[in-house]
Structure formats: structure tokens, C-alpha cells
Image 1 (tube, helix red, strand yellow):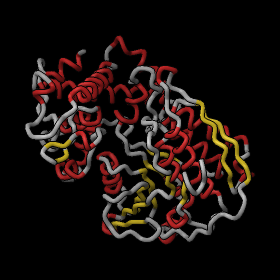
Image 2 (cartoon, helix red, strand yellow):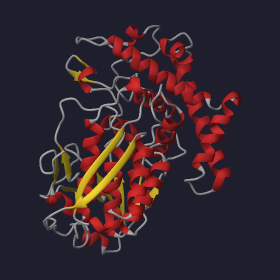
Image 3 (tube, rainbow, N blue to C red):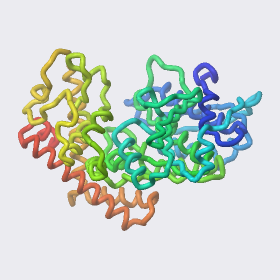
Image 4 (cartoon, rainbow, N blue to C red):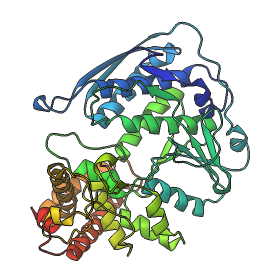
Amino acid sequence: MRLGDDIQVRPDRLSAYCFRQSDGLAHDLMTLIGAVKFADRKLMRHHSKGWGRYLHIELPVFRSNIWLQQSVQDSLVHCLNYLTGDLWSFSFTERTGLPPTLGQSPLSDISLSNRELLFVPFSHGLDSYGQVRLWQREHPDTEVVCVFADARTSGVENGNGLKRRTSEHIQYMRVPVSVKPMRRAEPSFRSRPFMFYLLAALGAVESGTNKVMIPENGQGSIGGSLIVTGHEAKHRSCYPGFTAKLSRFVEALTGKRVKFYHPALFETKGAVLRALADAGEDVRAVLGRHRSCSCDARLTSRDKQMFHCGVCGNCLLRRAAEHSANLDGSTEYLFEDLSANTLESALRSGDGKVKMRFFHDLARNGARDMQRLADLVSASNGDAAQVAATDLARFVDGGIEYATSSLTRLLNCHAAEWGDFLSTCGENSWISRTARG
């Protein structure tokens, strides 16, 4: 791994995150982010040997006196181990030369005014947009700063990678570090949230606002830690346990604690859509602009038009949410008719080869995961839900009673929305039979 070749830091873009004179620590953080991404993508998992890997990174840094502190190293390792299910270790060496000179963030004028800043790791997905809009309705004077904008965002881009929608009080900040593309990369990429959440946290600390919002709904935030497939480690990308550990790392590194907000932690995706509708949003138009499908877009085209696949876990969650909010038909799906008796019959007509074996596996896993999460409300699975609530209580305010009642409500709402959706598809439909196993 070579700095400047495999990992590149853009000082012009990094300046957008810096509200005061940089002392090299921000540049060190970008180098760390790039190194973690590079290692996670470079070292393939060998599933026959288990999930976990051992990853060691030796990193030259400008502020070695900070990075060599035991509290910094311990909190960093605990955070990444928890997130990816691997064993990470680091050694830090003194980096020669001086850190690049960084300009002052264009957001400094806002942070010095009467408007508050809220940083959001922004995926351009439905939940990201929805929670930003709902937050703005309750906090109209807040300037929202979205980290990880790409070409889909509108507005004028400055040389430092900053985009702005003036009328909506939204800023878009691009990632200031890049990693050289790999021919064959590890697909799980569990460290991905570390990059975007840490960038949002850096901006929050530098600006003095110390607030980051995680917009994911409850099924996405908690479901992945409750329902795992095979020997995989738990999915914790939006889980409050991860953000709590990341906050401890940021505090050990900077002396300042970042507060991560999870406004939809105990809300279903359907509840988020209904809240948007109640707030006066044109939710059908919103659905048309924001994609949920996790499937490679090259596999979901028909007649040279791209669709949501309709059967991956993300699409099934979206379909159940649309149905619960009376928004059926808002999204065009490759597998459009889930009342069909076979998956092949569910496919929309048109030209283009479809990899049916791949989609059979994808749909089967997605349907079973949705059903397994719904099954947690049954008495026979009560222990699993209580264990999850006990764990959540460590990271959310309100104690064990609040965590238990909130998780129970979330699981009951999910089960009801998923059950209603399957009823609409029909008891003898392929999707209903597959969900029941």
C-alpha cells in the first residue's frame, strides 16, 4: 500500500471539513480512512475458513504523539472489530515533511452565524432524503451538511468539492480521499460506514456543532444485527453500538464527543413514508427520484430501461413500505408481479437476458430474511428479542424498559406490514411460499 499511489488525499476537498487551521490531524484521518478501505477491499475473505480476517496496517502520520496514545489505538481497534467482524491492529510511525496547507471551510461563515449545522452521511437513498426533509421541517433554521454527494446532486460545485442548494439549506461535501481501483475486490466491504460516518464526525467536531444524524430506518439499523446469513458477522453499519464506539474513538482522538442521532431507529420504512406524506411531501415523486435496489443495475435492465429488481432485501422492504403507505405502483420493478405462482412468471415482459438462477437465490434470501425478522414477535423467539433489547439499552437513552418496548413495537409493525404485503400477493404466490419456507 503506497500513499500517493494506492491512496490519495485531496487537500482542496479536505479544506471543506476544516473550520480552523489544520495541524495535520485531519490529513492523518484521511490517510487512515483510505488505508482501512484499501485493506478491507484488498484482503479477500475465505468463507471455508470462517468470516474473520487479521488485518494489520502500518501508517505514517504527522501527529504521532496523538496516534500513539493507547486510548486512541484501543478505541480505533474496538470500533473496527465491532463493525467488520475482523481483527484489526495498527502501528503508527512519524511521517516526514509538513502536512499540506488547507484553506478555511466555506461553511465557517454559517457556523459563526445563528444557524446550526447538522452533518449527515448521505447515500442519496430514500431514508437519507426522508430524514433530512423531516428534520428540516422541525428545525427550519438548520443548515444540513450531507457527506458523500456524487454527480446526482444538483447545485454548483466549487473547486473544493462543495455543492449547495441554497433554497433548501443543504450543503453537499465530497469525500476527500480516494483509493486506487482493484481488479478483484472483497465484496463485503463492511468498513464502508467507517469512512462516511468519520467524515461527518470530523466536520461536526471542526464546526463545533458535534451533531451527526444517521437516517436509516429501524429495519435497516437493527435488522441486520438480528438476522444473519450463514457464518457472516452481524451487520452493524447503522447500529447504535457502532456509532457509540465511533464516538469514543473521535473523543479519544480530538477530546470532543460527537452525538450521533438515530431519529428512525425504532421506525419502519413504511412509517417513514407515511410521515413524509403527513408532512405534505409528494412521496410518489420522492420514490421516483431515490433508488433502493442493492442489485447491480446492469442486471436489472429490460428493453434498455433500468428497473429496481423487486426481489432483493432492499426492494422487498421498499415494496412492503409502499404498500403500507398506500403507494403501490410508485416504483417500476423488473419482477413486477409478485402475485405470480413462479418467479419466472413475475418477470415483466420485454427483451434482455435475465440471470434467473441469481435472482432465485437473491429473492429467496430476501424473502426469508424479511420473514425471519417478522417471526421474532412470536413467543418462541422472545428470548432473542429480549437479548437484542438488552444490548440496545447500552447505547440508547431511556434504559431497558424503553429499549424493550420500542424494539417490540418496531418488530410488531414490521411483522404487520410484511404480513399485509404477503396477503396482497396471495397465499399461493411464489413469494409467500418462499417466505414461509
